[in-house]
Image (cartoon, rainbow over all chains, first blue to last red):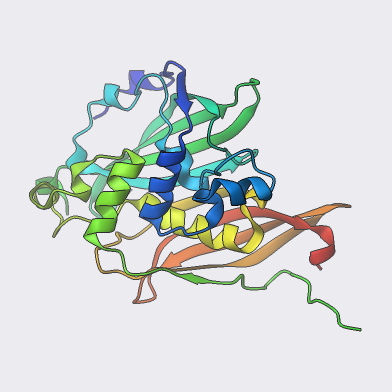
Amino acid sequence: MLDRSLIGLKSLPGVNEIEKGAIRKFAEALGEHNPIYHDEEIARALGFKSLVAPPTFIMTLKPGSNVRESLNLDYRRVLHGEFGVRYIRPITAGEKITVVGEIKSIHEKQGASGRNEFIEITETGTGEDGSEVFTKLTVVVYRPEPEERK
Amino acid sequence: MSETRKWRIGDAIPYLTKTPITKTQIVMYTGASGDFNPIHWDQEFAKSGGYPGVFAHGMISAGFIAQCLTDWVGVRNFRETNLRFKRIVWPGDTLTCGGVIDGVEKGPETALLTLRVWAKNQKGEEVTSGTAKVSLPASTVE
């Protein structure tokens, strides 16, 4: 069973520089050909400061320390259960976004293949002016050992 | 006089069919996203985890749903989403994303729309689904 004393553990703040190359590679991996993710001139012509990050790009941003590591997860047992995000505004290249993560809860639930543990981790992204840019929720499903699955 | 049809509750949004997911794409996403869990790129590791082989990150399907929404309303108007990853997406799967408007909150300038959204595989099974919120000019919503 995962260590419940880790509920409430907060990360250090992590500063993420939003890079054009990283945006382009992320968009390419998703097969996203919208020019606002690839062509800075077009993005500017549409009123953005620079290339725009695709909405799910926020999952590449890192807090200053990895709260998930403290759980010592066996990655063979990890599945991504849920993803939630609230956007205040789009993120553009050249910005610095500060991310803080927190383990919000760990609980158990009976699933089809045995008892799963659910880890809820939230992340908040803040712009250089201190205003919130996004809040994100990730639910990680921690499955039973492969040999213990029904 | 021509009248543009307005969006209303029950309307389906324009759907998006993506090209089949390849192992190369999964590796590209691994590098671009920084999610290096070997279950997505190391066949032996995936098998030791009880799976027949490597599979796509759930966030790839989330990225497709986000594309479906932003292709429709633009990136500035995508407000919120909450998605559940219900089925594994395998290399070779073709995902189609779509949604239905099931709520409208109309203000003087903008309308906030709540949707049910999904990504389905080529068998028609929902792999990822949930809700989303987008805003649109009030004049374009019934």
